[in-house]
Amino acid sequence: KSLPYFCRGEVIRGFGRGSKELGIPTANFPDSVVDNLPADISTGIYYGWACVGNGDVYKMVMSIGWNPYYKNTKKSMETHIIHKFKEDFYGEMLSVVMVGYIRSEKSYPSLEDLIAAINSDIEQAKVMLDLPENSKLKEDNFFTSTS
Ligand code: ADP
Ligand code: MG
Image (tube, rainbow, N blue to C red; front, side):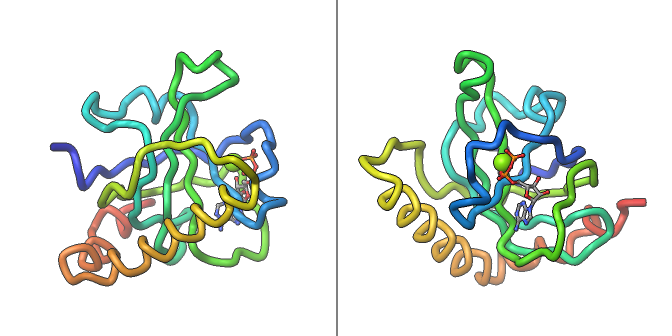
């Protein structure tokens, strides 16, 4: 199995499906990062650790899904970092480790239901990442060798 899975790439612009307006901005990885995903990483919601540039390491939730821009033939990887940033960080290097799987992709009857599901993912991620075997990955050398 491929978890934990470490990767990094530049933060690119998505096509503004309004994640930020929902209060849940998601930093998008370029195709080069998505194309390198091991075949056994399925679509769905993951939790892990993330850092922007040489910044602090924060908890994250990541959605891997089918990208409508490519008529759902290509995957997308979108990371929501559980931290309030003062500014956007498009063009910066985002480093992540995917630690565990939360659930598969679902469609929700309403926006309210979607937001509730994401908030529940975030709460689950927080708890899981506090477990010793998961929290130790925050200190991994991967996050300190970003120069
Ligand atoms: P896009 O469609 O361009 O991905 P989003 O509404 O999803 O637009 O916003 C994503 C952007 O918001 C990120 O690329 C990043 O620059 C910024 N951002 C600010 N705070 C966060 C955060 N906590 N997690 C992820 N991205 C954030
Ligand atoms: Mg996004």
